[in-house]
Length: 289
Ligand SMILES: C[S@@+](CC[C@H](N)C(=O)[O-])C[C@H]1O[C@@H](n2cnc3c(N)ncnc32)[C@H](O)[C@@H]1O
Image (cartoon, rainbow, N blue to C red; front, side, top):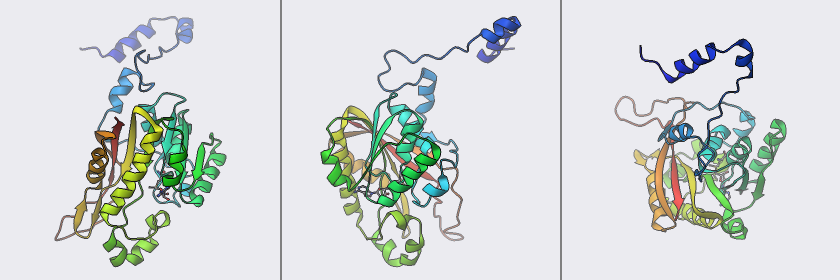
């Protein structure tokens, strides 16, 4: 029978006396000395490069409170991303902070973070969560990123982790105004219609302003959900990646798919048309040139 690595380890420890077995420390896997990106071991690094994230994230850290926002991301998912692109103690920036998924993630893994958020309500919820959970409070600036980012010291961050606001498509606002007004999304996005081009220009502006704050060769991870609206699929992830690359500031490195296992399925086109149930989000990975 072929022996696995684990079997070999088990047999070796079986041969120890009771005393020796108790004093035996498990070997700590080593982080390569020339690893300049993160604190992951080789095995962890390999796992972290999977292009699909299918891990189930716990509904925790005052989820009910944070879900008043409607666009909140699991802090543990943010921590997992932060651990791939930073070392302990490094600095993370989020120019679209929401209720602080990135900031909570940074606290969970011993990193520093700064968030910026337009709406004070979300900052208050973040602060309440931090208090209730006994986590380190990160810097959270109330304001418009377009005004705040130019005041931040250039090249002072090691990683940009953000989740862009949704595109308020014109026809959605017109034809589904009732539904949009009552949806959770409307709580963090006013129902002001915007063309796709206007939305892209705004995202480009904030993300390029953010890039000034990021050190050279460092990474950005951007959550962006594609949309199916008015009988058409809008590949917003691809459009945003294209716009960002056109500035020559960024190089696109990956499009990770986060399969959100908590999403429930709905029936849309039955029985005549195929309409996707969107249970994934894209995470664009870009590197500052
Ligand atoms: C998708 S949500 C982020 C959610 C966040 N990842 C979380 O876990 O809570 C985007 C947030 O960006 C904020 N926002 C939109 N435009 C902004 C701007 N120009 N400056 C600062 N915040 C902005 C919105 O108010 C919204 O809360």
